Amino acid sequence: MIYHYFQYEIKYERRTEIYKELEDRECIYSRTRRQFLHGKYFCLNLPITDEIPPFLFSLDQDFYDYKEFFLQIGVQSEPHPMLYGDILRKLSKVCDQDYLNSNELCKSLKAMECFFKYLATNSTINSQTKLPGKKCFFCMDISETKKERISCLAV
Image 1 (cartoon, rainbow, N blue to C red):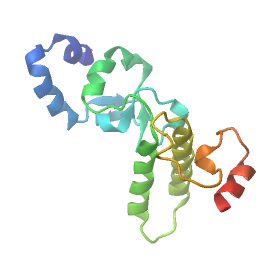
Image 2 (cartoon, helix red, strand yellow; image 1 turned 60 degrees about the vertical axis):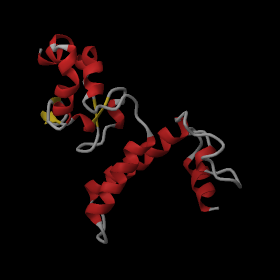
Image 3 (tube, rainbow, N blue to C red; image 1 turned 90 degrees about the horizontal axis):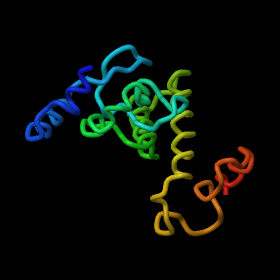
């Protein structure tokens, strides 16, 4: 497999240069899309259920042996809130003042769900990044009911 060559066979002195070149190329195969995509669209430890095509894909299990190579060419190691924040930003730019069509609405809802899911579990959240005041969605356990979330957000 070509990925084996890029991870193990390239001379160490040339790796940085070659990896930098591959960062700008569509060189990772997505089974979901059945085409090659840039590394920036993949996340190594992303559950398939949290994929949002065409914005974000999980890396196929068959490729885990080459994870060091993939991390060097732009694949994210772990899912984090800003991956989904970027998706929401892109959808916002595309839609501008128009209403969302059903496909865009589904993708934006999924992105919001995953944004809050990973925000709640992200280890980089600390007392400096939390807002003062009443308990809000960011502080809740993700398993709480939607009704409680809505009432908290409305406060």
